[in-house]
Structure formats: C-alpha cells, structure tokens
Image 1 (tube, helix red, strand yellow):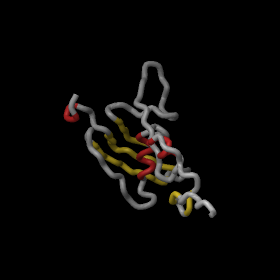
Image 2 (tube, helix red, strand yellow; image 1 turned 90 degrees about the vertical axis):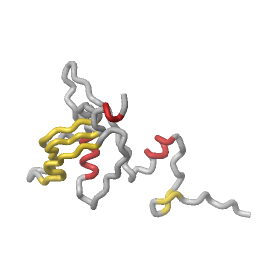
Image 3 (cartoon, one colour; image 1 turned 180 degrees about the vertical axis):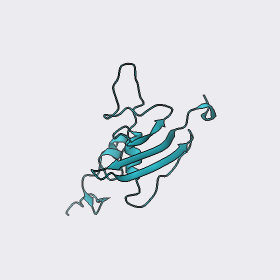
Image 4 (spheres, one colour; image 1 turned 30 degrees about the vertical axis):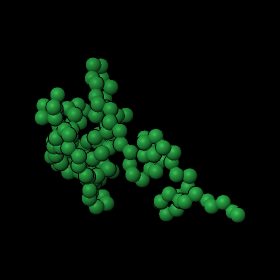
Length: 127
C-alpha cells in the first residue's frame, strides 16, 4: 500500500479539550489532517496545546468534543473504551523533558548525571 492509498497519519475534526471545572480550553475546534508519510514539526508557545494534542493522539486523555483518528483508527490508550469487538491503535509519545526515556528507546544508556539539562562530561582521572 502506498502513502497515497493510506489513511491520514492524523485526522482531527472539531477536536476540543477543556480542563477544570470552568472548562478552560487547551484546544478549541481543531481541524487538522496530516497525510501518511509526512514528517512534521509541532511548534508553538507554552500553553498552545501541543502536549494536549499529542496526549489525545495517544489516547492518554479523551477529547471534550470532536473526533480524531491515527492511521484510520481511534487511539487505544488507558482512557479508550474497552468495549467488546472494539480495537484501537496503540500510540506512544516520549516527551523531550524526560531524558531517561529517549535514550532507552534508542538502545543507549542515559547520561549518568546532568548539568543544566545537558549531559555532563565524565569525571577526569586524578593524576
């Protein structure tokens, strides 16, 4: 199957997510389609809803309204309904702030210690 024949990698229709008792919107009426085979960057200021969008795509949280699919299926995360006969796509996210996860996914050891968020140089032998 070519990319042209594949369902979109991500499709959101009227996607909204509100938090708290007052319903503060993190995302409001998002309509977005990302074709399969595309590499994209999700950028924006703090509080723009980037992490919320990724958490919705992974099924970690449920939308307040609207719908979304990933590769043509609803995400099946811990919040996804587990009704009989319903299957979903399992998607994961490794956020950049967790310096232990990304090296583990790449099969390398995480840095032993960090200095201001960067890997520290190994200690020099005394001599």
